[in-house]
Length: 133
View 1 (cartoon, rainbow, N blue to C red):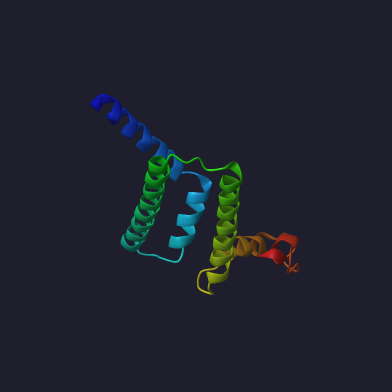
View 2 (view 1 turned 90 degrees about the vertical axis):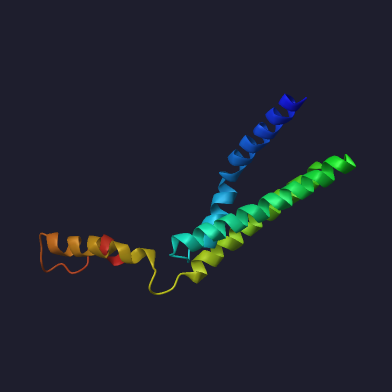
């Protein structure tokens, strides 16, 4: 009996770890910590998100198992759709929250300089790729 319980808890833990690395979770946590530079703060924020997520799933699981109910497929699909909308919202949040000091395209300045300095014809000011940088 105790061995079965330990095996079930271990299996539940492993499935939870697998669940944590699904794309929707990676997107959610990365967008939440994207503005933070401090490792300690991002770790705390990630831990709070993880504990909150775990608590919600644990409570929902207890309710479902206690009441012995089955979630209809239409509700499950609706919840998956809601997750998709949340991911889209988080993507917009990250895009909107990018400020002037943290623009990803600025890291390509060195490529622009390389193109300008290595041009065979020094009179050519804009190459086709340089226009986009």
